[in-house]
Image (cartoon, rainbow, N blue to C red; front, top):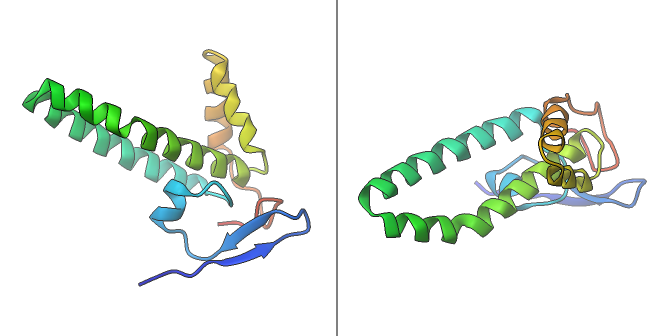
Length: 130
């Protein structure tokens, strides 16, 4: 069951893809929009999966635990960036707002509030409403 995305451009010149939201799109694409529901459900699923795997590996072998963390560090950063950028796009903001994370406490709090905001209605400069 393969989903085909159609590449389109809007009046801002931004390219986006219309089609069904897939796990591959949620986790690896930096373009388009990600609804509040998809963002939070995927985030919670990733957290539960990682905590479960880390707990099992930590109990089995500490060295394996460290290797696992180092091996997954880059993919987890990529996934977090991709999801955060698309979530900001959904409220019609640039992904550059993720740099607020570099401001201790207040930056993370501001982003948390942004990630809880409802989607922009209809199309915005990052594409159609997911």
